Length: 457
Image (cartoon, rainbow, N blue to C red; front, side, top):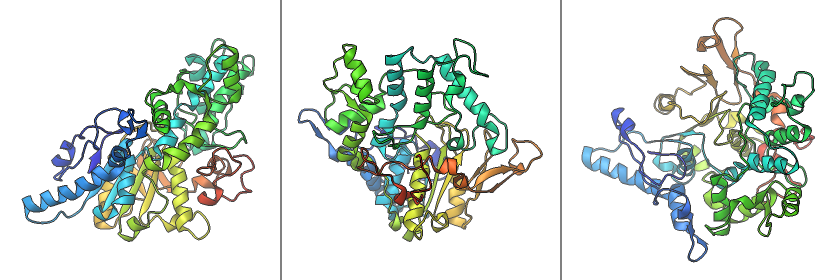
């Protein structure tokens, strides 16, 4: 079983499944292209039936029908059933794991768009920060953004032991764009240097959305990703805002970074009647559509008890879905099944996460490793790759270069260490509790991070 990206809306291509000798299955998720299906505009209500079909019910029914067709045609039941989905297909994969685990033996979930409404709201954090910068000073140019990105990568490239132009764990990189302020030692020449307002804006993009208490609401797109220059709310975020209000006519450009930005817009003569801050929209999202569209649940006990194997992978330079979301979900599961702490050993027999350093929004052919785990009991500790970073290790381990030989040869790496042992990286993880996005309350208890360990989160 598989699904395409985004919100689906068309039957996925199943030929690759068929050529490998399997039966391929997929659906259009019960709706056509686009995201308007979630709202019945005539009555200003959510179409919860179509949303439920899209999130998982359509695939949950389809897999059962596919098995019956197979039994009828071949005269025997299928041997193994897998979910393989990427991005939007990873989102729907989580729903299969949580709602239909009895139908599957394994699930390969790539860069999942789970927690759909929250992550798509965060898609436009960079845009609204740049919008505020442009209200205060010259807009950030592509040259300035490119120079800051390159400088951050150059400063932190060797942190993983290999200088290859990739950040092994972007969470541990704290290089500040204030280093590129015009006139500072090592800053680029004009026009690619920045002023202080622009530098603080770039740092704010990399830091991620925070509320009025200074606490992170959601995760950012990290250093190493060239974030562009747009100041217009992304279409993905517009969909979030429209579903939150059950109104397909709502203008997404009513979204602002904070109250100061709204005040600046009003002073410039902009109609701010419907203006809303990121914090306010995050609260509305949690109260209206977040749970309905999430696909992911912390309690996956049914999947565990049924013996389902779960492999999740995500590139650390993904510019479409924030990879830290998967680290957060993994920590929450480790805490949920641990003994009062984030105990990764408590879940690794059946649930593993693989972070691919430097990889963007890209599907990976990791199905053979999942099949070997399910059918032969060979747990995937490390995965060798033929392009990009040569080795991917099961989180929280990381690939460690042996110190000699080609850095592109997988044989020259071992898996070890603990990415979350770095306090800088770990303290990038706490965020506000769900439903309390405007309050001074962090999710440290859900993720197993001691509250006093991270003074600034």
